[in-house]
Length: 468
Image 1: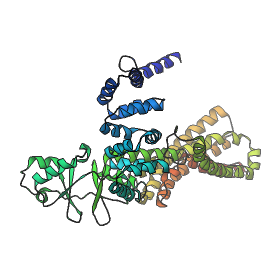
Image 2: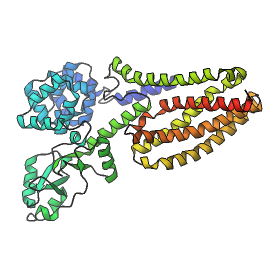
Image 3: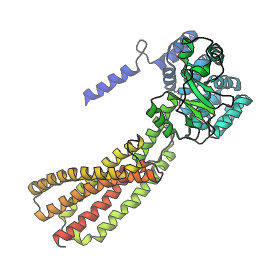
């Protein structure tokens, strides 16, 4: 145990130690206290934006954190700001003057501004809206009208839009004037006078061909586009399927309105995975992090499912009361209930977990329900047979009970595993068919249903074979 603790202390020391043995954020505070602002500013500019944000998040003193943040150049400060947690962003906005906030918002990517507005309380949102010009305010309102977690809410308007009749020389000059970040200029999108998406031109093509060539002559047809109303999860599937890093977003008339970049898709995937994990544990999904959530919210997100599972578990008690005479006649049957219930729940959870993941990755479709049933039936027969045989031998040699009792237990185990595997396989598909999240058919619910099933099978087989 001592060796384990020492190892943890060593790893923690290695992780946090930098710059002559002092933590990065401690070094920040030292430089602030010594008023070595230029040295601190140089140190900040030499670091990656994400690392700066991480180090600043560790500073407990809000005033010192904001003081250091104000030292950042405006372009770097916008990048760092985008990596902060929501609470930190909120505190900075509330502290900033309107002039400071305007500069910060101007340097931020448009999609980051939209995400910020969606996450902030009304008072902070009003301050952000007030800091932008009239044209940008109109665009923000337009974006906020898109459904939450849709392609329209994920996209950015910072992209290169060329016309078919442009010459390459004109296109290059136009791109220089846009002053976009490098993540958005790998692909140039070609539209007509009505902004209908016509095709794409990779940026490197513009640099390799003659200045007098027209864009329309070198563009490639764009056969991948995403509608503004497409869900974030479907957007992620499109990126995965076609192995792309950017995708154009079009309205119902095929007019180009924005693009989605891979960094936004990574956020969607992380959010979807977090929601699935929460639902697998029987917790109502929440956008807030664990430490950011209040005790009341955490309790509220958990108690609904606990109530549902608790009430459904009362079915087990009702069945036991109904068959009380059977259990009183052969008391030894009670000793095997935990093993049977646990195995049934585990068997169903294994199947449901694999199917839920398969549905999320689109390896399994709702039309594959028969294939899933057939596969889980065979798996259940194989696994159930092995478990029943092993358990039969264990009971006879170690439990020293009657052969009939061992037979009742092992037959129950066999049928439980087979049925639980099939239920665990088809219930997520049924949920998907009903347009529900398949993750609701996760371990807690499967286990509760399995308990009821085990009791029904067990007690009926006992009545039949033991003649009770």
